[in-house]
Amino acid sequence: MQLTKVGLQDRAAWEAAGYKLPQFDREKVTANTKENPFWVHFGGGNLFRAFQANVMQNILNEGLMDRGIIVAEGFDYEIVEKMNHPHDDYHILVTLKASGNVEKTVVGSVVESLALDSNNDVDYSRLKEIFTKDSLQMGSFTITEKGYNLWMPDGNYAPAVAADMEAGPEKPNSYIGKVASLLYARYQAGAKPISMVSMDNCSHNGDKLYAAISAFSKEWCKRGLADAGFEAYIDDKDKVAFPWSMIDKITPRPDASIVEMLGKDNIDGLETVKTTMGSFVAPFVNAEECEYLVIENAFPNGCPTELTKGGIIFTERETVDKVEKMKVCTCLNPLHTTLAVFGCILGYDLLSKEMQNPVLRKLVEGVGYKEGLPVVVNPGIMDPNEFINAVVNVRIPNPFMPDAPQRIATDTSQKLAIRFGETIKAYAASEELNVADLKLIPLVFAGWLRYLMAVDDNGNAFELSADPMLEEVCPVVADVKLGEACDVKATLNDILGNTKIWGVNLHEVGMADLVCQYFEEMIAGPGAVAKTLEKYV
Image (cartoon, rainbow, N blue to C red):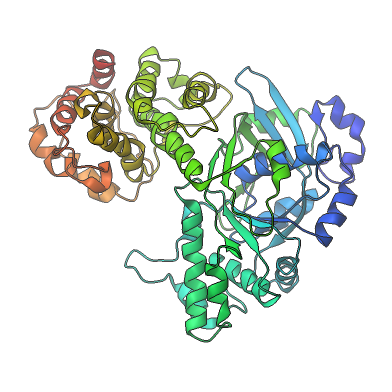
């Protein structure tokens, strides 16, 4: 079987192999979409293919809409050339359920894929044409938080960005520069309204996208490279909106076991392809069943409310913020980080295996239910208890989700302040709660400091996950040895006061001594981390 328009004509063979197929007239949907596009998505990676594209497919299957999605890839153009086009923009979604069932779906809601490449005259002209259409309601993004960053560590623009600022909107090369040029085309076509929706997993994502686009509009107007009204157009929320959103769905890199499973179905061309830019892409994506997408209802060209039939929630900005804080600061992300830190030290390769350890399971339950939930503000549109119940009982324990603690441990220094520091702040500000009652969050902090030693609980060296602060924080514990005496308070004194890492000064909130106590017990010798966890959890 072949994952192409021609190959899918043999529907009986695909259905016999257990695949759910598109139930709509794709040729008609394609024609409607190209004539009157309503949704362009930037970044056709795993998250988009597993979530938004499948939501759209379900809506098309129900006959609730007659147009699909157009995808634009602005970073690695080979993804479009080597994956989308050879498969006629179809892909396979493998949903890995905690029950042990596997659901296989051929997704066909993406009906056009283009390279966001100013040197590709055909695709770039087509994207500009799309952005001048009255029907276009939104451009959405899953390009990671780094995609919105225009600046170098020294505060200056990155070279490609600086060059685009000076050259103007005709043929920019930086990602956001190219997006800004499409908006300029829409402005020139009559300042038509649109919503630019970041769906990336970062706080107040719409503000990050706005800041990046706005920087281009201001520079181009200041230099006389764009019409003077372009800056006002970008700043006018009734013309161009940048709503906040909260997204949640785990979509790991294509797993070898899934390739093997699909291979038994005699599907050609399932191999993962590595592009020259280092992207790993495959014609399938594996993902968990649970998914959440909450978007601020800020759509000046009309809100595509039909998407609510696929589970997407449109609401007020304040509610989006509450949902995000519920997830990031309490009900999911802190639990992931807890398991990541101790999973690396204890030699686990999957989060799901960690949840089979009663001590680790009790630890994440305590961090979430006991210490986190008391400060959660109920967003109203979803119940915090139900959300965390799904995380603890369904999502993380799912044995079919190949999610490793080593991956989650990436950039932990950048996560601790949000995932735990906000809870500490809430306790400190509360009249009913006491920071001294937090016993497990400092245990996680001590665990991370122990992790930085890059020695597992058996005394064997392991490789730390990538983190921008490793060169700064690893030297703090470089001289600490398992089983050897150490002045822990002196060793950790400075780092425990680093608000950049923890979000608070641990000395000032009265947590430093407890972290030191835990850390000292964790370095007593081989097996000390497991013993410490069992003692205090």
